[in-house]
Image 1 (cartoon, one colour):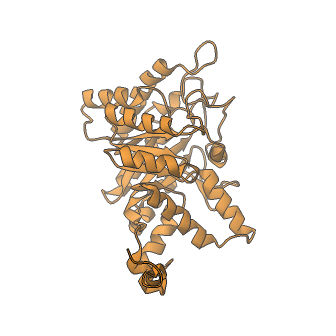
Image 2: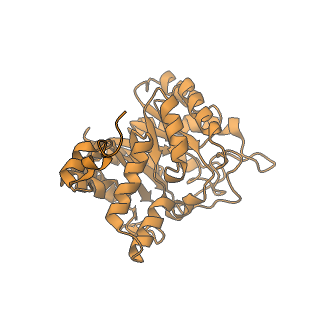
Length: 331
């Protein structure tokens, strides 16, 4: 085996062109998904203070958001609803005229097959207690009762036109129950994205501002312990066995080890969600002059890609798609 000086590993790094030639991983706009917040009862977009550059959109603006993302080549939008009224059962999640289901219909009409319309399937935005499921008498989250509502929610979203349902509630058996309900109703082509390795993370803080969360307590009885890696892989394997079309690791950046392990084991495409806290830290650090904003965004996304993500949900999807189309050089 040759060694220095015959073997010089720096040769392939000498120039931008050489570095581009040697690049192992690339960002692809068609494999980026833009999370979109639609808020009931507003008539103009509202900024989210903890997420500079991200907005809550009125229903009337969703068609434009979808068209703009499609024009940029973004692969999908993931819709999150912010209802005006919430209750203990999260009834707005299953109502045909609920804000999320109305937004799905608007988005699907605007998409015209050029971008996938995806919807968050969870009760946390719709319950007055802020949990991802129904509460039992003792205040715990009732897994099996929640599954019945998830099935209704899936059918409502499928009827509205969602192509991918993002199962983010972390209830045991949710993939199997929802797949069964959809298939029985004839929605055999609606795809399921399982938020399989979803950790009980502090990085979700700005998202909870975005959806105006009413959470009481925490979600540690159903989301994963940040200390556990094998458990994340086990959750993904279980979801695949139940019929998930895609599995996800969330958050992305702090869990690249889990992402890599899931990607090695999975037999379906693996997604990762670069969550609100990851976004906010980079934006705020850049505003303080501590880091180069664009290079840091690109590096964070390439790192997620390198760890094994086939698709990335990121609040920068629209902006990065423009960079890709313009041939922006980060080499």
